[in-house]
Image (cartoon, rainbow, N blue to C red; front, side, top):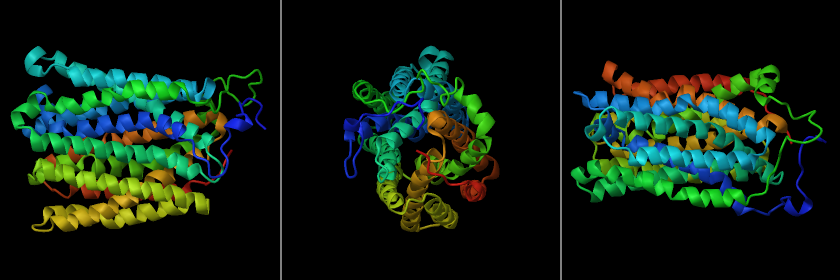
Length: 434
């Protein structure tokens, strides 16, 4: 047994069939808030672009807005190393409290920032700072929360517990899309630009006190700060780079498939539909609401399924193959006349594959890492993967659309990323560590 690890007393262990929903809610809130904010920002990118990054070209303003969206991802790797190591040294709970407070600060800056017309160049600076703080916090959130969920679960419930991380993303994307749908449907364009786009960010802020309270009362599952530090490295980042470099590299490429699909197929799609095909806002947001429901259902059943078969690699490979088949028809039917309903059907299937991918890739990675560096490793893999391939995805896709003039450019980009991820998944060795 690892003497550097704190083990839970018998009263806190999870028996077969028992579900600690306080742990699930507390661990999922932070990631949910992150995705809610990112979803809302994506949906209102065109409005934010015009208010904070004025340009002669509509694509120019959108491109700047999307670029700032990507700026937050620059801080993710730093956040993953600092906060991930903190979670492995001090505890998952302590790191999770820190991340949710930082997320609230970043969200507040965006929600209440005056526009360019009001304070000039300082306006986009506030948006950038808000995104940087959000990115730093998000870098440490996923690793800390996911490891706490895994370590709080019984051996036969790990997939179910961890699935709530991805489910929270789907619920948050659904809530974000619903906000966008309601605001664009009920508010006139003038009100939407004046104050309507801020409403979802303010709603997100209301979650912070609830999240802090719940997380403060969670039980800690692990801390490396013990008298015997043989298995608790002073520098978890160096331990990972020295002893688990292959897992880090392949892990980043493994999650690339799901990351790119999340940020292109799930989050960017409403903006793409409105900007490229001039589809009405309510229709585009309804499209995303349906997609989010499908994702939630797919992730839930994927979690149950992997617990039953105790294998994560096979479902992940299936999801990538399915996405490779579905991605091009989804975008093609959007471009063709009178085939919107077929685009909806194919996107539903594609989102189903994404749901399986999100759960299986997370389980494959987090289960393979040793417990004493698990939070740091999971955080770094997720942060670098999302920074390199998620944060840049919307910027690259927007640039490809503008320079190529080909509305199917996003499909080709996603196809390339899926192919690389498929190879990495085949090379990644599945392990089930304690």
